[in-house]
Amino acid sequence: MTVPQPVPESLRGPGLAERLAAGPVVCGEGYLFELERRGYLQAGAFVPEVVLDHPEEVAALHRQFVHAGSDVVEAFTYYAHREKLRVIGKGDILEPLNRQALEIARGVADGTGTLLAGNICNTGVYDPADPATHATVREMFTEQVGWAAEAGVDFVIGETFRWLGEAEIALEVIRAASLPSVLLLVAGQEPVTRDGVAIPQACRELAARGADVVGLNCVRGPATMLPLLGPIAAAVDVPVAALPVPYRTHPEQPTFHALRDHGPTALPEDLPFPTALDPFTCHRYEIADFTRRARAAGVGYFGLCCGAAPHHLRAMAETLGRTPPASRYSPDMSKHVYLGADPRLRPSNQEYRTLL
Image 1 (cartoon, rainbow, N blue to C red):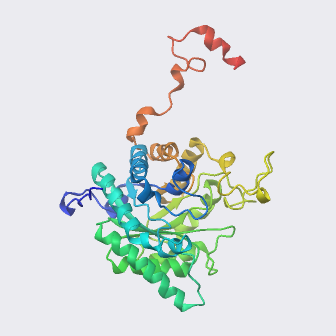
Image 2: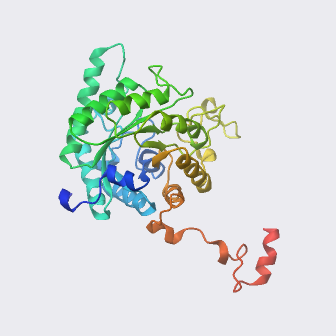
Image 3: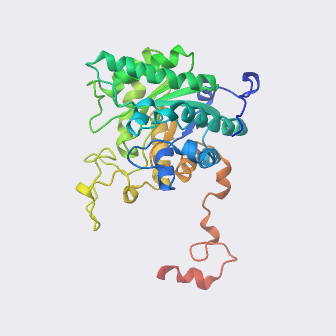
């Protein structure tokens, strides 16, 4: 694979802070679920070996998200850390996987004028009572952030943290590399971190420690993430991020892990997560409605997490006043054979619409 050379800083466009100052930023995510649906990634471990096995598919998805309205190309290094690779017995691919993911993302970002983001995430190692795990987590983040810095990323996303303490280590490592940061927490069935800190207070602490953007990603769908966003915005003086999963969670089942499907096809424990969530998927108009409401609540950094597809992202971008390339193909039902109102359509077909 040809290694793309970073564009000189003098030739690159505005950075994250400048873009946020000018208006909302959209970040396309959701690579894990989308590549699993396409048959290039295994559900369960969710390790992104596709970066090495099928780099063309990763590059294509990056381009499709930009086409739909993403301002950011995020290197697919989520779960590409030492612990996940240890679990599947492939620690030897750690550095090649990370470096290749960054190269793929760099090529698309440079070709589209979008921001390039590195990525680190929850490790499954952190234990607040065991300082040895803190050192292990720090080492894992340091090597991944180091590769991202060498690739010339514009900023680093640290995401899906349930432990505030783990997020703080991530932030310290990103700041030590002199890179801007987006720090994203998970609000589970209760809006507190696993350390017992209320989500707004946890975001306040991260902002006070120097995070450039704070907020939430993953796990909660639009309906159950939205009520948490206003309190976060009121608690911090930095931009707020919101990247829900595009699933119909509700107060009784506020996370996509908690959703239950009692339909005709038996599922283990009626548990649709992660491979039978299709009946719960939000449509594009629900995403548009969330975007409007989240913007009103003070959100400035938008995106969607596991389960997102380009049409969801386009709806988000258009709601924020954008016209991405994909808008050329936004729905226009005026010429539909049965549902349209164009005078060139045959009246007999329009009359038939009541029998559809």
